[in-house]
Length: 544
Image 1 (tube, helix red, strand yellow):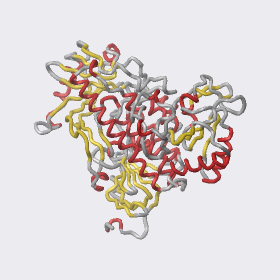
Image 2: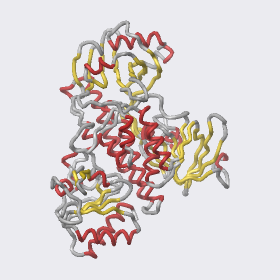
Image 3: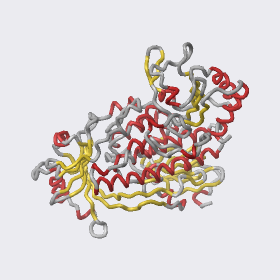
Image 4: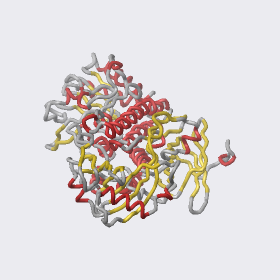
């Protein structure tokens, strides 16, 4: 072992050490803490993001945050996000409009979800996540970096350093989660390679404010691609709230072989911003100038032993479609319940291998589709766009992993329109309107930290079998009967059975992340057999 880590005792011992406390690291820590596991999070920056960066959350991401119990907190901070917003191609913000490159906003507004997406930016969202994660029990340390780590068969040893005092501490964790960004030091030290399109371009990003909100409103835009004689690039709107005023970002391509950030002094940046706006003398206040690389790369593995990659450390992709942060949050959600189940002793350690098996193919597909969307926007315009961001964000399935596959599953597509899925294992559990005590709610409101068994109106025997299975496995599980005259939850639309692909005596197991793990389209032969089937299904999902 490295001499830095060669200690017989450690300054502190934690179940999970999370390196990186930005959007995805905070989300993961919140999800894990909500499962009763208190992680330690170290973040090298002094606080939450001051850069808006990620500018929107899809309906699926809001479903995830809803299941974590913080939708209301996010809604209190979100700015207005009209349904008619688009991605426009213009001469300049005040000039001629050529095309709308994102007329379809269904990833944000869809009847397939009980929630709507929003336009909250990262600098407004991260403080909410921080507060909620800390309230749930996560321990966050800013101005702190991990400077060394080493794994063995029983856990991970790490050295962390306070960047202000220089003090170092040793930490022993059962598991390490790397949320340390696109230049992940954890990924590099583990020797995990990357694949994909690679570098697409390099950009200079200028964050500023100016009196141009009405111009964005007149374009019905939250983003504009632009091209004129002076500049070309993209303008992004970060709507203001009671926390801060409207902010904007201009991105322009540059060649790092020919230029550096020093070649973009304030005078030049303001000239470019004014040309992008289309008003030569408009007052502009420049806040920040930075460079970044647009690329598409996916790690060759999301796991190595007791160490995992999430977010940009696992996968980076162009911002087209706004799916980067949203995909990272889905990765965090998938991993959190699995780590919690293993740490609580409810699952075997092999369950953790399903994180890579489930999420890496989705990352490959998402990166491929986002690159294609970017190319279609640039070369073909709206008429040539074939990428559907709703399908990419909500319509995928896990062909293998923590599921009990059905016969014929190998013939199913891996991605399709979400409404075409009807309860197949590995797919997102559908939103169906339910009713109880005169109040309507969604099936999705039944999912959260536990496994859930949903049974049809004539599935009483499954309820009894589930009680026996819970006792046999010592596994907490919520059990609901949907429909029926007495004791069941109402289904005003009578669409639950169709949505989940079962008969009135069938049953479905939904995982804590809201994905189908198993189903039986009808009842079993007798109570003992049904208990055996349920126990076997849960044991398969949990690798027990």
